[in-house]
Image (cartoon, rainbow, N blue to C red; front, top):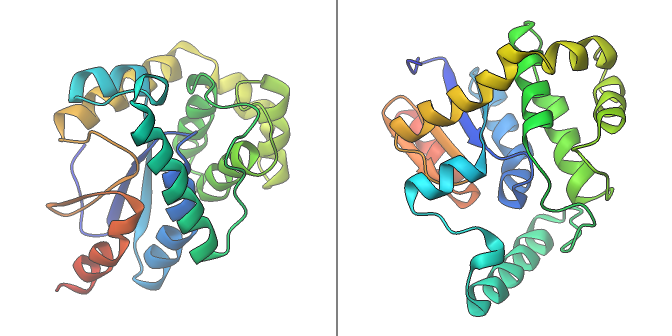
Length: 202
């Protein structure tokens, strides 16, 4: 999909803590600069093997320890709610990702839904691979959760998740979150200052 000057392309996993940490700031940046966020939820089991990523469970213990230290630092610095060891993590990403894509395709802004899904994992200890839970989350942000979940489970959106991930790999995306604005690709919520510079034309 072509990048446009009015759009920030946002690549993420629905269970990425780093995407959750940067999510509110991204939406605030987009709003302040009059940009639209285009959401690209991806499939980690496809993305990581294709781009050199290592699932958390397979990482060396020092890397796991440092991840926890960094999550704690960012949680405290930004003053956000974040459960470092959520009950339902990781879980399959597909169902929540399909719901986001179905919402976006229906012409709705999925921003509030995406943030509510992040909070379900990292604050509320909810299972985002559960149909009833996702339906309730969608309803809580003013969407027709039941109708969207029916649509989201269709074969078109099953395929759309795979297509999103394949397109992301082709575009050079390898981790979460990744922000693309114009020809600038930025990996990590700690690169949001550079995204702001790009939005300003610096």
